Image (cartoon, rainbow, N blue to C red; front, side):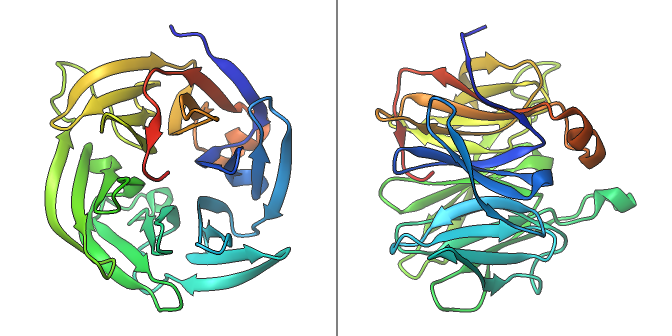
Length: 286
């Protein structure tokens, strides 16, 4: 197992890690906090989101956008004020979740698609697009738990995790932010015999390989297009999200936790931000 560093511990369920201006930002679901930490673990709460924060991103003017999961909204944080930015409830079939914001300020928001707590069966759902100062629209449909998302450095390709389909799906990004040319980037269902990784949070490196958090196999995987595994890093609990950061973007930050059950997460506080050094620096967003 590669040597890791515990950057922050005692969390409930950390998600949505983003490296921005020399700090790592992330959401902690069940404390309802968005935190920022430096690589040494000096961690501060930035904002509290009553309806549970998840995905994070920044507009070109530095405004922080944060997904408010339970009420299916995107909030904007600027000048110490938190305001509603977009209401995604028309197109989200259950809680909103991860989000990516590109250099133009276009935000792409995923959602669960079904209520597993009520024993609903798995259903496909929409990826929602919110352009600056516009109402939400559907960017893509028929996605099975659209989750972690990346945008390539040329701003021309979006790749998203479909967690409950065990695949990564790519789209071309058109000039207006809409998506086209949907295609399979990697099928993980038969990647190895008796091995069932599922993609959660993801990030991209300069060799166009993707680091993928896989909670079902307690690890992060580095894979290239077509589903070829290049590297694996195991963690002690479950890996839910990852991003490449640090001054050289060669530090892989991983959000880990013992599970996602709210009561257990609150009681055990096993959530951590862990970090690992890698050879290839990050690229694109996040």
